[in-house]
Image (cartoon, rainbow, N blue to C red; front, top):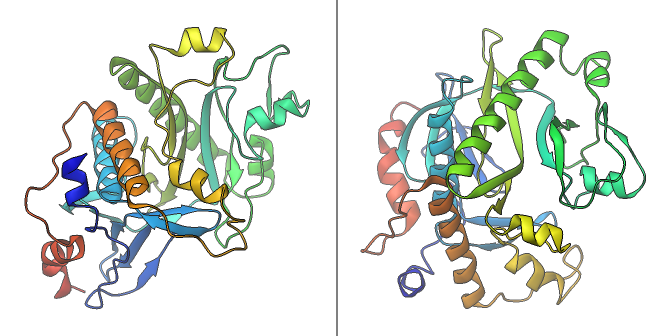
Length: 324
């Protein structure tokens, strides 16, 4: 924790680089489209919640990029992905894709908090969800008979995701039947690999989100991120059986310190966000780092010498300035 505190001010809040073309800033990532069809994706340290940026967490962008790298490499035999190279710990160079308008979520447990989660729908009495029939008598956080895909519309412009069934996806022309078959096959295979490797690390991969796109030839390619702490839910396998039997929430990587702290002190959708304590920021950074190490089995190296992340990224991306 002491080493983290020494780097508490070295956060990447904004990855604007004027020498690179076609800048688009998302909630967490800054993107640049190069003329040759490649995309530079820089994972910032921004923490997004309540439709706004709450804080910047040291090393968060690096954790997300490197966790995704571990999984992209571990699943490359299952499904092609967008990755071309990694010039910096926060940066991936990928193929530019046309993102498919359906977000693929695979779930293996009756869990979740959002309006579109199967637990929320199940508690409301729904048993036919996303084109799948769920059995009666399931308990919160119980393992499903088998993993299921719960697709939603992808809200590109700040809209709300809406649940979809496979039949609706095809009938509405969001995907062709062949595309849906390919996407669903890839998603279930990726999830199975994720469960297998997570289990070796004493973790349960509960659910996860996948994003797919098509390249210029129409091939379906895995994009964005995979099995990161932001896109996936993990539980600790060792304590799950007893906690489930006792009706307790499974142990997980709880990264919501900042979200909970803010929600207790204001209406985060309307009010100004109060200043977030530095210790809370460092604690959240520590959770992200622990998650990386637990998921990948690899050590997270905190740099000895302080350096502004944007300075390092600019230096590593300098070769792309002249190509832009």
